[in-house]
Structure formats: structure tokens, C-alpha cells
Image (cartoon, rainbow, N blue to C red; front, side, top):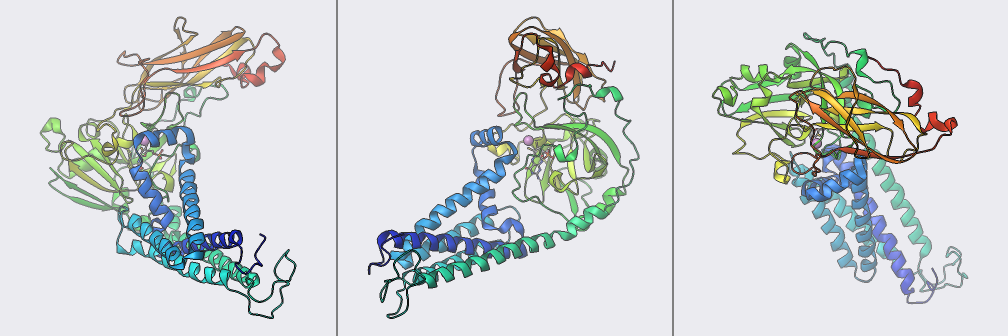
Length: 559
Ligand SMILES: Nc1nc2c(c(=O)[nH]1)N[C@H]1C(S)=C(S)[C@@H](COP(=O)(O)O)O[C@H]1N2
Ligand SMILES: [Mo]
């Protein structure tokens, strides 16, 4: 920063001061909005609201790219992107404001409006949701106004210039009052940071009731417990995913930028719609008074690429959905029922449409309250979510459930269907090589190839592996835990030095072989065989254990 002492203030310096003013205004505005949102509701915070609006409008191709390349980091990356854009606009508005104060302030106010419109468009929004952004816009405009004034104010004649930083101190009357400006920047930053922190604390306070309600929830034991998972369901090879996925490792796919935290005491489920002769409204107590069923179900996402990570297996505890629907007077289409689609709605406005026929055909479709022996984690739908064996999550597994409405597929398209995904989507047969990892360098000799396969609600009857396009070889299957879960498999490979590609395919109990035809995830799930390429090293046995993930030592058939 040089030239600040010229009477014009120096163009570069004025720009820099403007940029600082812009950023300061943006931070103050966001902090004020966040504090207000903690009172209104967390989803009404401008960055969250704009983020939510962006998520809902993201074309499937972009979303698929984001899920593929960013994985579960897609949400932080989106938030960061919004903050960066906001920062750039703030800098531009600040630079503009130095020359034309009104224009800069108008930009700040406009940003408040953008946030307000986004917040009003969110599911479940009321007029109050506009307030945090409007307040934020006002605060930003106000801070910008004063900051720009301070930045461009000239020091009165005769005051000393020692605070002017590296400059000579010769700045006299007419030079910029940098000390005053610096103080304003510091003070505003401190107040904004305080507001930001208060917003965080208040937000936690706001959801404290939900947190306590989960901690205090006593889930009754199942009337119909699941048999223990067979010991032989887990292959003993390092690198294979655990048969039951711990909740903290369970993949998470949803559109929620802030995880809804529902207080169990406030939770209600409404069941209504076509063919419902007895509409129901249940609270959690009424739901838990019903017989609970425990069932192991593998859940997977339609966005899962071949070989991808978006599949998890859990022991779910819940109420049989079919029984509840029958009590409400619902009949499946095959018994003359009018409705063929069950639309589940969540507290955050998600809609998920499930075939009523599938829900009522005898499979264990659940309104789940428990996952692996605990109440559902907030991220996985506390207090109640749906789980239906054999269907992708986007057509079956509504989290933070609030409503079940019966209608037809002809009359209504749920959230993802409006975004080019199929109305109905049974899970396709898939198999995955968990070990060796791609580009691993095992030593020649015996290498354990192992992984998981699923043909949900049909059951896996065979898994085969081939090397470099050679003949298919039958893998050993781990014990089955029923047809609604994935099944592990293992194949001992006599690996020869060089580059090799391993492929896997599964066959379901109907005899249908997993197709090798490569298809994208849109519209109803990816197909193709998972392939892993490795480079097998010649002979030095010393390093083999490490490079095969120790599998040689653990090759102990469970059969
Ligand atoms: N409310 C709500 N429920 C939802 C979703 C969502 O975005 N919002 N995503 C669905 C999708 S696409 C999948 S694959 C599963 C994932 O469940 P999980 O996050 O518990 O693994 O939840 C389903 N339920
Ligand atoms: Mo999904």
C-alpha cells in the first residue's frame, strides 16, 4: 500500500480499502443473519438457504459428477463455493462503494434479498424465514456505508501521522485516517465474530431438546427379533467391509445442508390419501406401542457407481409398514386398491415415492426407529425413517419421516423423479471387489480376492471372478444372512507377476446373472462388472503380507 498520502488517496489504496470494507460488510451481514437464523430456524441462514436452492436446481449430470468426484465432501464444497462467490461480490461491491457509495450499498441489500427469496422457497418455510437474510442485508449495507466513510475520511489538519504504518509520517492534513479505519475494521470484526459464535451456541441450544429426546428415548425390545448374524457371514480377509456397517461409517446421501434435528416429543406421522378409509396420526409413543420387528437390510443408493461406496448394511428395528397401512384401510393394487404409490414426506420437504405393492407384498418394509441397536442417528433420520428391502434409497428410505400419502404414480412425481430419475427402481444385482485395492502391488503367489455382492430381496446364489478376461471361476460364498442383505465372498488367486485385471459378477437366486453391460447411474441404477487392476510383483516374499493387506495370513475359510 503506497501512495495513500497523496491527496487523492491513491487509487490502489482506495480499492484495497474498498475491498476490505466489502468483506467486512459481508462478514457482519452473514454473522447477523446466522444469529437471527438460530432464533428463526437454522435452515433460514442465507448460505444454507441458497445452498439448498442450488442443490434442488442442480442438473443430475452435475450432481452425479459432484457425488462421484467429491463424495460426501459435496456439501462442504458447495458451501465453500457459495462463500467464495459471496466474497468476490463483496469485494466488488466494496470497491464500487468507495466511488459510488449508494451503488455498493444497493448490491449489499440485493444480496439480502437473494437470501430471503431462497429461504422463502425452502420446504416448510414461513415468512419468518426471510428475516435472517433481510437483516443480514441491512447490516451489510449499514456496515458498508460506515466503513467506506471511515476509509475515505481525511484526517483533520494538524493531527499526528504515526499510526500510518510504514509510511514516513509526513501525512498531514488531507491524508486518509488509517488509524480510525483500522479501529473500525477491528471492532466490526470482533462484534461480527461474537454474533457468529452466539449464533452457533444458540443453534445448539435450539436443538438441545431434540438431542435430549434422543438420548432419553427408550426403544422397546423387538417382538420379532432377528436371528443372530451367522458367524460365517463375515469373511476373514483384511480390507473387506464389515458385514454390519457401524452407523458412523454408514454412507449418507441426502439434500439436507443442516441435518434436521427433530424432537421426539414433537414428532407426528400423518397417514392419509387415496383409499385410506381410516386416516391416522401417530406420535412416537403410539408408534412404539406397536409390535417391533428387527430385520437386517442392506441399503444402497441409485447414485452408487459400479464398485462404489454408497451401500451399507444395518440391523433395523421398526414397525411393519404393511400392518399400519392395512389398519388405515389400504389395499394393494393387486387386491383392488386405488393407490399404487406411497409418498413419504420428510420434515425437510423431501418426497419419496414407493410402490404400495412392494410395501405390502410380505417383505419387511419398516418404519424404522432403531439402527444397530440404537435409536436412529440424526443423520440417518431420527426419530423415524422408512426402509424397504430391495429398493434404492431414493424410492424407499425417507428419513425424518413426517407424512405418508397414498396416491398414484400417474398423479404424482416425487422429488428425484422430477429430476430425471425413474419412478420405480428395484436394486440391481451388483458385486464389488474390496480387496485387493485398485493399483495394489501384491507379491506373486496366493492373493486373496474378496468383497461383497448383493441381489437385494432376491438373494445371491453365486459369485464368480475372472482374471484378464479369462474363464469365470466360482468364488466361495460366505454364509447368508437372508436375501435382504449383501453377501461376502472370497476367491484365492494364484497370482503371476505382471499387470492383471480382476472382474466379478454375481448371480441371484432366480438364476439371473449380473449384466456386464456398462450403464450409468441415471435413471435407475448403474450396471456393469466391477474391475480392479493390480500389478503383481515377482517373487520377493518379504513384502507380500503388507501388499496383500495381510490377506495371506488371514485366509482361513469359514466354511
Ligand atoms: N429426507 C430425506 N430422506 C432421504 C434422502 C433425502 O435426501 N432426504 N435421500 C434418500 C437417498 S437418495 C438415500 S440413498 C437414502 C440414504 O440413506 P442414509 O443417508 O441413511 O444412508 O436416504 C434417502 N432418504
Ligand atoms: Mo440415493
